[in-house]
Image (cartoon, rainbow, N blue to C red; front, side, top):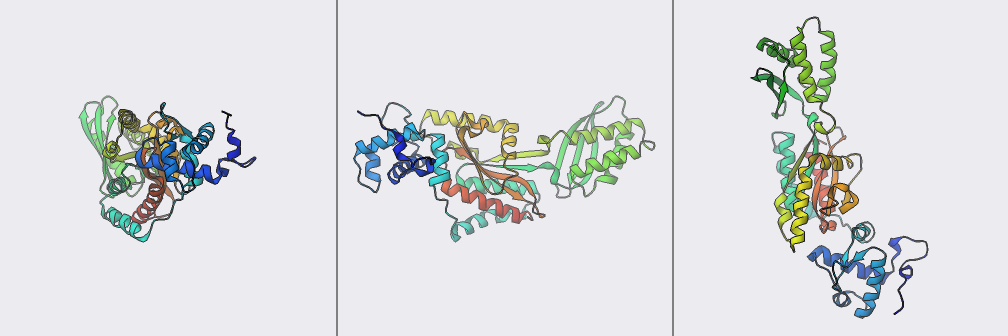
Length: 362
């Protein structure tokens, strides 16, 4: 049998987007079947599904060409085919129609997220938003948010051991954060009280980032007034807030259980286990989500397009959300198997990010 040359599928010097209509139709059926069932689909089934009359043999010829282009592959020796990650990316970018949400769907998301605005703190609001988004998309929902956005109200040092103290930070929104601090040898309780008084006189109403700048200046100016041990306590306190860019951001993940639904094989379970491991390595997830913070609109990462999820073969769909000044302050979205319902999840994430921005004052 003559070898099929896939070049006939594509107009000369054009990209994958120029697949002819027959090839697009067959490829779309393979992808949509995979997204619906997770199972390979064979030429006989496709010949029944496509609009134009084609024999299973003709469908197999087109499938061979699609496979040579790297868009589909055979998971084992059966006649069925699945889309590759390249194929999924091509489908999402060139073939899939991402419709806007209809009014009923918008109302549903809005009512699901309406309680977000009533939460006592930004963290609680985002936590609620994630639970709702996870339920809407049947995937794990994630948010990356800056810790330093909360404005401070009060700080207190509580000695735990001779050389260890608990630093209690209270935000204006009621949020409380505790950090353990290593103290210089010989610090008396009076130094802890004096350090707390010095900091409280200067941090109220400021974010952690603003407070750091203010305190470093104030400490330089007040060295003559403070004894050395108090200075060291204050310096150690400031240092504990400035652990680096990733330390200033927190990752919240909700809805892990949704990833355990609809598993078809042991290999699916293994992929989900690997994804759980990935989500535990929070630094990697923070780096990945951080890449979307400068983007307008929704970003989509499929499988090994990001190294973090290369083993679990997962997809990430994320969108930025904003504060009252219109600045991007974080990203939220979903992480799930590569067979997410992209056409539904993409507009849902986009709309949820806009609703959260509005409810948080953006």
